[in-house]
Image 1: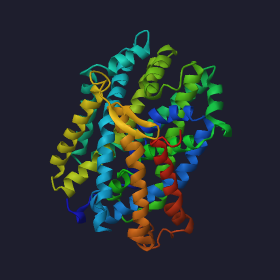
Image 2: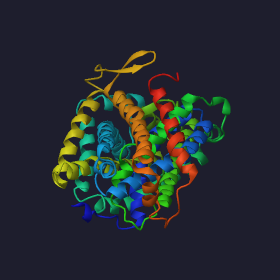
Image 3: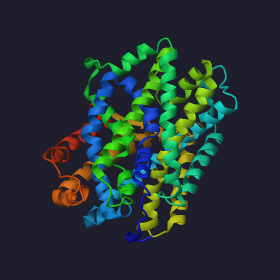
Image 4: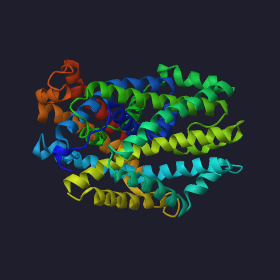
Length: 453
């Protein structure tokens, strides 16, 4: 499909659901609760919301405007404004491919747990043993990952503005309903849940540190999906009638709501059951399986919860895959079908390696430089650092420089506000782009290389 024939989303609601779906995923439901707990609860939450306002919202605006102006893949949209700047789009593609290599694997775990709850709800006497026993198997987790990848790829054959838009318009509202039901049930029925709510909602400023700030900023990057081509890719399919500023606000608000509601589900639930909330990646599976396994009606609630998380996985993966599919389709001129196949094969090879890294390849480590010396990480942790903690902040930093120095305020304002129809660029927005967001990204980069302790 040529640039002049770009397919548009059928409705504003459809676009916002797809864009919010891309932003709302495992980052909100799987990662946010345990980072919020580790980062001091209420103070992490306040810091997170401030960063959403100062960084996420303007970044969504910038990336979407670049995408709508270029009306092509995430490499070409940069090149249309600055011929030598396509490398920013390639960084986004490398980043997203890397994230998909572990995201699909975890998505497979979610599907396994959803099916397990629906079939029996039996996770044995020790849910920790069940979890680690499952993820360390050489074959079964790869099969689940393949199912997730196949469903995603098949639906994308028809384009993100066709079947994917229709599916996402259903599963996103359903996700919010499921999360709210689980949150209300947990807060109303578990005796220790009030204590968890207090810790989660009431900020203790003594818990604040640059490390907490850096973790919150990194989580915003991963959760909202800025710096890795999501909104430049989706922006290419937005009509000129759309108000990019108001759409960016809606996407940022919905993403933040999903993360906060997920925290309402996980933290009070774990507190109420006296569980360890600091289990990191295992939290969603190990803790929630044990809690729901012991609650009255827990099997139904557990099934609902993991189905909701599965919705979040797919709503994100549709756009995660689309970033590279669109690049392969248009920039590399492979066509839609071949682009989907090529991207799926690359991702699945990564899925196999990452999955085996929890089992037969557990001893395989890669070096990561830090202030205290070279750290050795497994493939999952290394990819997480390389993509989420290095490439995402670099992508945001480069986009800010690109808008400021290459596109210029006049060109950016013209596209963002559609020739003044939807407003004008403020001095505060320029300050965020030139100084505030770059400073945040420097803090994130200092953190990943061990400078913040």
